[in-house]
Image (tube, rainbow, N blue to C red):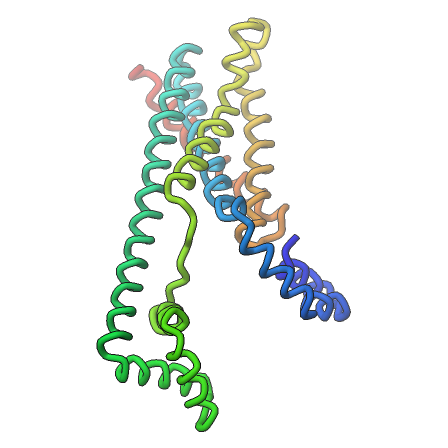
Length: 264
């Protein structure tokens, strides 16, 4: 658990000593060190949302096909086609959005660097105004401005965050896309598992959809609960919320399938 999460939970439970412990010098130093070396956490959001999207959309396909009383083979074809088609599409979307955002941030950093080199007085005045609005007053204000503008990287970093509101994301677009694709395909395959096993165990065929409903509901709730690590919501609320979303999507798909089943 992160230092911030420790402090948040302690605050919710009104545990003053634990809050103080999370704000000691050693705790803060250790947290900064671990954050710099934590690569896996960068891709947690991609995994969670890829898994949720894969599960919900695949089950919606299964529900719609079942509502239309399509054959087992057709359901598998539609489900697998959805997994691969939507999975690749979502992964490419993740890659392009991450890459585009990083390219934009890079251009803004280049612009701020150029401005610091070619119009330093104007940039110093911007720094001065930023910290004046924060309540700094001379002579401390001028000391802060001199300190920041004496280091080119610190200067540009400050302008990126304070002026532009940009916090740069260092994660790899390719890794983000791969995590999204794997989560979408692997977890999204869950609604199809009973249909695949039915080929080896024909006795399951009469209970395929009810079994798919149960295992999919459990999966959606479990992965939805993992959203609490991303959005800082209670795990059971995050899981229930996604279960309701997935249920509504399945009901809508099943209804459309039942309504238009005669066209198949």
